[in-house]
Length: 474
Image 1: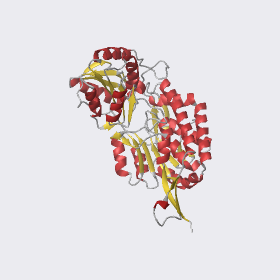
Image 2: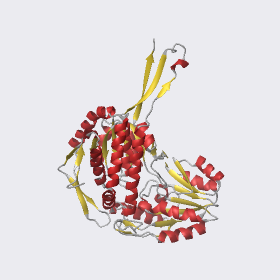
Image 3: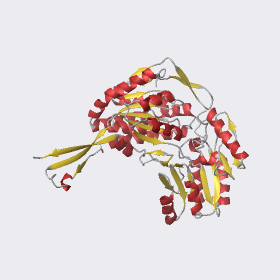
Image 4: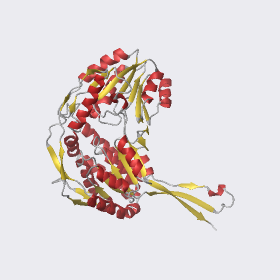
């Protein structure tokens, strides 16, 4: 974006009296001051979306596809600018930010493809006597207005994962980016306008819980796509009324390393699974259960690999671990580590904090009731736990309020299929960590990890409604 950031309300750039600073968590510099939407501006966004939904529904599939493909090209042209903005506003390493932009380009491209794949079906009414002269068809129509409420940890790609399918399905869109990282969301709004999206069909409103609450409770919103904590997701489910929901919530993801696992595979992939993006991902590996026959060898290699991680300036391409989103988040993670230590856990490596940066931390001798095990840490902390058998490893992973993704390392197809069958999660990753994700796969969980699956194909379908057409041929 050029100039002072503004909000996008029904295709118009507007300011607001109240502004908040966006602070770089690494060096505490102010990146920008961004307006905060009040109730009047949110109402304007809602009104614009309600008025635009008919125009979006009439937009043919090829135009939706063209808009999304052009948006993907524009994102590619601005890759370095977008990646640097992500790093400045979130502290994500520049390598991870560039990867996020590459993923976003793919996400938008797949959404463009899905715009042309929406299809109906024939219903055989003549299965029932008396309906021989009737024909039935099901068509899919857009739901209308989609509210996209997104988190800070993937501030660009997770908007693409919600707004992209909404546009592909023919809906108007209101985006509420995370208040800690709204800049790239505003930049995506700018890109969508340049790509040719009808202006009234897109708004980007910055703000906190009051803005989200207004969107969730308004009857003009037909679909809510949310990524965030289980607590907020449950509140949305309680207050949304009859709206359709896609809730991608939290996790304390577990991985089991079986007795036949190859440590040359397991160790580097689990280091990345636990500590990439500073552990601030809902599928970051938080619990590693290792068969006791491999435990000592695994732990030795794992600790050596963790100690080699580079902690520092996220703008330096050599950095592996940058800061967390803010000092308060880092202080919470540090408090959980200290609480675990007080309960008998041992810090094998890490355990340090400086400002918003927490060094990658490996814990041992943890108990199932410790926060670092049973709740979502959302930080660079992993617990390594020996188990006596496959049965115990799978049971310990399942002993969780969450069920997003889990991993298993094994050379046995029988063990892999047993884990796939028994693990109570939305995705089982064989021979990789729980953090594996590509953007066209159906991503989502069970239990307190959410409702629905987030992939372009799944979201495009869910962001439409079936309509039955019956023709009587007299």
